[in-house]
Length: 151
Image (tube, rainbow, N blue to C red):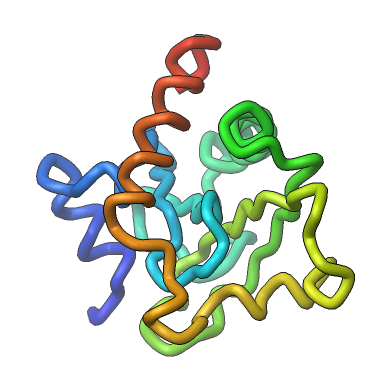
């Protein structure tokens, strides 16, 4: 199987901070690699799942909690006013269920609000949040999740 997410889940112990913001038995959190928006997180199941309907009861039970915890941590770390949570899992090589947890910054331009925020994803490489910045954000988010006892 050619699944980017599963490949990273198999290497959990050797992932850089940007690919392992936090994890538990069911979920792993990473910073999006092709985003121009700092703090764009991806919440992925630790096992291969291609449909929300295929989540186990345990995975489903913790999904909402993760989304709220990540939203709170993003608020503290990035100063976002709210978050967007979106799930598609349609792109070739990325059919593994994943949830985008996107910081909605107070000064986000009107033409990037709502679903138009996806203009920040798949941006030209020179606009991507660089690896060091993603690692720094991952460390800050991880620390915030630990601080409140929710990682």
